[in-house]
Length: 285
Image 1 (tube, one colour):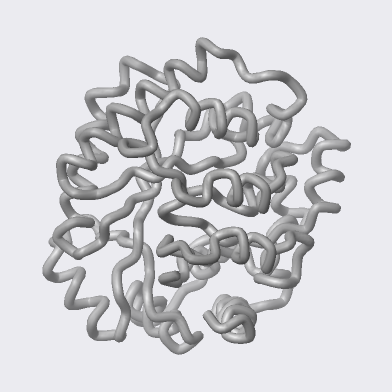
Image 2 (cartoon, helix red, strand yellow):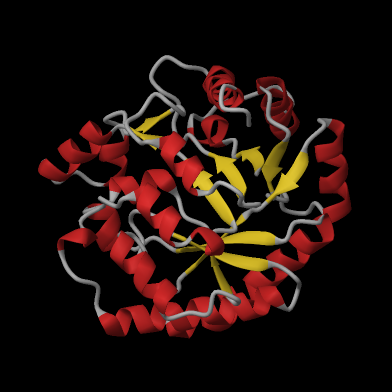
């Protein structure tokens, strides 16, 4: 497996470093990680971005494209945007990109509730066709689009994720699940990874405190309010069976992108990242 860190700790925590992005990348490397997802700053070309990563001894890993997959009218824009992102990935030597469905207001207001009802087949058809179009566009650039689940989006529950997968060709749409978001929405992460082992090309490895998720649903809190309960955790500090998740991918060449959306209370971003790196080292990664 290839391992990277998405430096969300710094950006979501509002951390300010003297050297901006270079300061963040320097701390990512100091924490013990060797790769970060492709996120090219506005106005910066591929070559300048490559040089920036090299200065810190970092490699590029799969980045993220968010698209309104539920909206057929938006397809021309997001398919072209995904194609451009794939071209950048290919130029950087990265053969996968995460494809997430954009958040929608009603699910941000009442997150992780979709598992309470069966998915609508017509909606799944629309989502699948959008994912297929994106997958075909990125494949033309030599990059696999990896369908990603996200709380607050139309691809939130395990049933919704698997419903789209069942309607798409694995050769066109790969799988790039998020362990934390899937568990938040009530899914069984390890079983999904085992069932789709050969389709998983990238993974967001994230831990979560399930008590916060259960409380958030019971109190009908919105997305941000549930996060504020201490939902996210450093690897090994939450409730997910992350070793089982990694074991389910044994033999896979998938990218593993570590994410902690918000550091645990009292932890600086660098310390949060070091805890995750230590957890991975203890497991030979």
